[in-house]
Length: 470
Ligand SMILES: [Fe+2]
Ligand SMILES: [Fe+2]
Image 1 (cartoon, protein in one colour):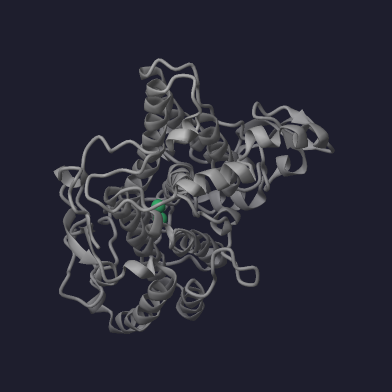
Image 2: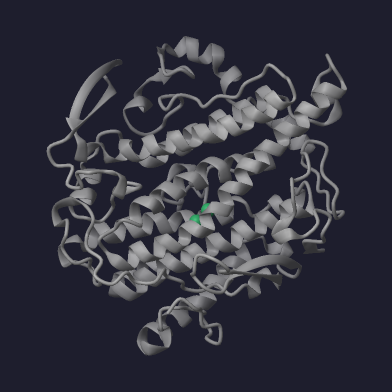
């Protein structure tokens, strides 16, 4: 059952036509989704043909088909990885019991909350990015933006399928609400902070796909371990799509850096701004901003919710198979908390530190991206080096939100923060400068002044391919 049935109104590999009631419910939700896309998606480009990939199977190889599609006609559907026969719960108190094919009654509310929280990020990011098409630095980038957008739309479908199928009436209500909240709306915002932040320029978009979509990767890895089997299978397939989003971010920022390095060498001693490139230290500030905001998405360092989700077998650790003790019951986790205005070393039960355990993996993965960017600078023989801000820097959630920390994570006073914040986070002038560069470049193969061309085109096409027919 890995092939996807495209003859159906809603493409799927879950035998949707075998459950008429569910099929009707989802077919009733579909026009609402399309209406949302039509008003909150990249609306001005809905009539243009875009070179998009569409999933045709969930097999490891050859799952993608490439072709020109108008976005509203993209075949959003429901694709789950195949079931593993005899799969058992891989962690927590239910370790070794058969994985659940239905929602365990006692965990219904927790599970719904986990699914809704993940689901809400998907349409949110489409809303955040909806105007970027007007300032795309190339057709290649415009196409990548739209690919990310349609896949975030599909991720919403993935979560809505779970809500409709397994949560009855309240699941259907949650699915409706997912189309009603709005990113950045004061009265009816998206659930998580980062997903309400404006993402109005392409440097922000690349940082978002690098750091915020990477949070998505780790949340999905943790949910892919879930003892609730349909959630695990859904997330496993979402991860294959997510990888492209992070590729867009990592290589996108890399190309901005590449361009700045080129300009620096061509015009020694000059301000790269004069040549329409973005200074490396401004790029670093954008990294600091999006990395810190996305680091918040893991929640509080010490959390009884995270312990509950783990104990119940609902949300595991990324790469759970790498651990030896899957119960994590008698283990501890040591960390520096920030309590009453100072850092305090504490040892807490491991289960209560599951947010921090996931954040550790995230920080490690981010660090690899920083090293990739530094190799670009090194290749050009420049002295500048990028860095990841310490996880305590600029936090709004958890212990560290109560204080101020420098890029190395040292506590500092409010006055020191105010004196230096302009060197650490984008200033109004930085944002205005970056914004001034945001002019569309729609000629095939051409790039904006501030970004280098990609190393290669999409799906072996030449980089001057007409990816979007405008
Ligand atoms: Fe997503
Ligand atoms: Fe994503």
